[in-house]
Image 1 (tube, rainbow, N blue to C red):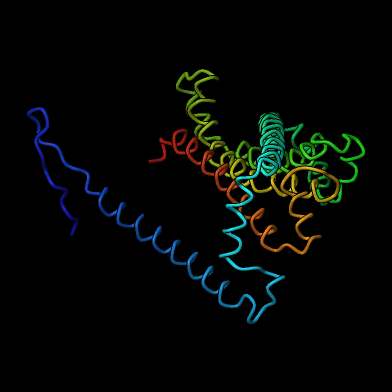
Image 2: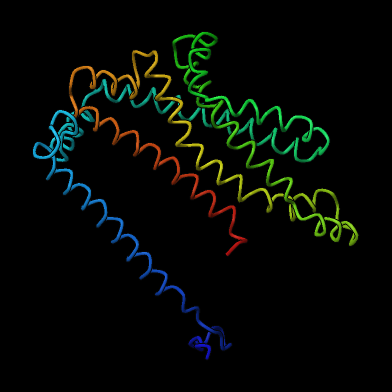
Length: 274
């Protein structure tokens, strides 16, 4: 038996109140509490095994990592490392995502061209991107340009195939019905094509943040004298596990922040799904 929603008066009319707010809020609190519990459990186990079951110099411990994190965040040199890595991340992600979205849309719209180029792009995508890092360093130098190139190359293929797949899966019967009813080409794009592509596009954009960071850090590992990858490598060479994990915490925070920002835009853009 369906549960009736409560009634209320609004401007002289009887309307039904939405009863979804409270359960959703409670569910969100349960999820958040569970996430915090898992994180605290991991930190507790980490603190427990450090120096007892696993050597300290291999994993440090949460207390020392937090102390190191507070210390390095107050250092101007760390601010410079964060700024360099952040710049490489944003530019690499933006260039790769933009190029991938445009080419994915174009090849999805022109079917014959897409069928010609799809297997070629699949073959190129099969090459490990990190293996191409030395070539990027040769082409773009040892500065931030090579790191941006590596990140954008990784993000490009991720976004391209998501958008291309979305374009190929546009419901053609719906397009034909809209055209039969006299809809313009722009209307069909706005109301049929864009909604079909939006979901895989945003999925690729969010996943692209972490993949772009992988490319940036890999490039900084190979050759750099600044950035969080360089700082992590230096900490490893100096047997400073606390510094290494502090850098990892900052890297993870940057990825989470980037994904969260894209998630905000995604919710606004996909309101029609609710």
